[in-house]
Length: 391
Image (cartoon, rainbow, N blue to C red; front, side, top):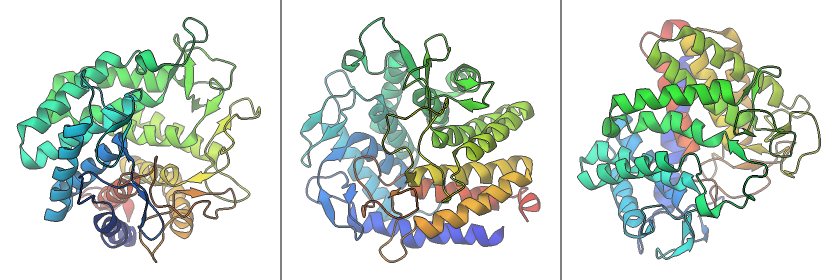
């Protein structure tokens, strides 16, 4: 597996990060451009808060854990200044989007803006020690916990007391976010939170008969036979399982680790397109028609998170199915998504594996999933003590 270590490190440092360094910095107003076409040209200047926070995290984390590249640190600092100056309302909730200069465009309806602002600032605090970053990361995290049972608040479009559902995405994110903020909020809070999150992910949203995790369930955890309730997102399940693997390793819990591997493999088998290759975006658990017209697209983040998950599953357990899936995913992903000509990865493929859009970043894709996954894969594979398993 040594060749994979070098391959992923080279892809990160020579193909992906130079793209964002060259094209994403807004020298005039601060923050980052994320709407970048194939060649890095800016096609829209709106700034989406969750992507701003994600890029701050990426630049800070890579500076801290890969190499002390001063350009990455400076970019993270200027990005943080932009979001701190413009990104929050009077309650401290983070807007969804701003215009280029920092004027608010969309209200703070989406708690994931807060999650990634907190995550980014916490990472930047690690490399700067600037109290402002640490304090606002802490305050934002506290506010997330206050809002977790009603994350959209007054912006929720659902009619009260009718079909009340809760979504899988927030507990999934909290399982990773809590670890990212442990140096700020303390181990006691993290330990209490991860026990709750593990229960939610592995029991409440998990469906025994299918071996899969649902995107939405009733508040009591029961199944909802509706568009939302039948929805399965294989990528979310797989990403969540590597978060859970990290928690299982932290807790020294081999039974939890084995469940994570089993569920991840089940989700891969369920989501894999045997005809064209790749993992489909959505499926209906009862095989009914989906409301998502993009259900059969192949998305960058799904395949990247699957690569991380299979690398970790193999590293933690030595399961050969994880190794086989990793190699299969590696071939598909680099063949279809990576763009050595202009840098970075395509985001959206059709079912046949052809690029649907030329963009490298937009409203939903930024400087996060690709570099994080490349970093996680190669550091997982090169860990001392794991090499004997991975050779």
